[in-house]
Image (cartoon, rainbow, N blue to C red; front, side):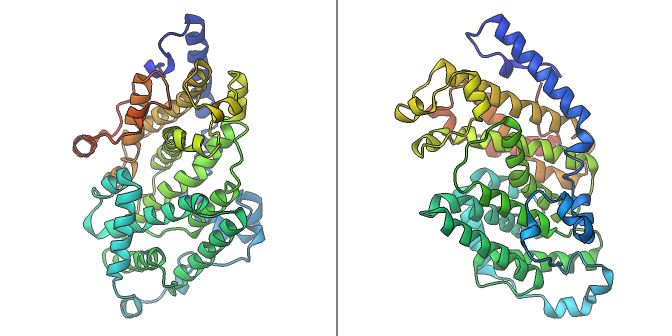
Length: 391
């Protein structure tokens, strides 16, 4: 993969550029060689096998679900447990209009870019996408809305219990839970009426909870690999759920989603860098801050741009760029249904481009602002069928 301008920050020596370029080549080679060991493991087919094979459950699940009682979703127990079309039609819950409106308003306010992307799904799938993104927002907001980690864990447990009830068809009276339950049942009915396979796996929901819960105490990532794992288990699980919800079962789409999730997660944390500084929270991995002699204490006391911060940001942004370019390499022949899901990478590409223009200064006010022409860009890329333009 050719190293783009994002690899060479202005003002750095040729030797540094050569080092950054060689790191990119090594990183890209590692991802190509480890493809079957990373993105393949994360694909949805693994999730179904994971749920069916209880004997292997604890060997493969890195979310420590062995602390939870084994429960089967009615959507993963086999065809003999499924109800008939007539029964599903009678049992399906009434459309929770207020709950869906709540999700729509929440996503528009807290995840505007995600809200824009959700508008490119077919009309009957939009409530599902809004419910999924609202669920992600609910989890992501817990850390900032509780006074201590114990309360945060209680709220995470509430969502674990709620998901079991949602998949059992008896959701609690909480708007996001109601919207998720309705989405699952609507998919079941639509699938039986029109064919296809668009079931969402409970494992991805719970993986999001577990990863968010482990992050409640604000531990700094020790390595870039830990940061990428966090992004895979949070942003990746959301993308896998969205792919499942539209019935896409494609190895290429899984690979693209896996790499895109890592890029999205890294870019999101860099974009929120000023906020994290206010919370005395360092999102750049410790191995990178140490490598570039970036003092966290000094940055917390006086969050100003330094050469060390730019160098550290460059290295983290480079990793995001590599993942985004790798995702693009898998997107040449994807099902049309996958495009609205993977449009989430477009805002990430835009942010990395703006970060480069600001000389990799994560504190620059301009990169915190919304891209006013993003709706037009999303529409154009979707019409062209080419979502990313990484060179």
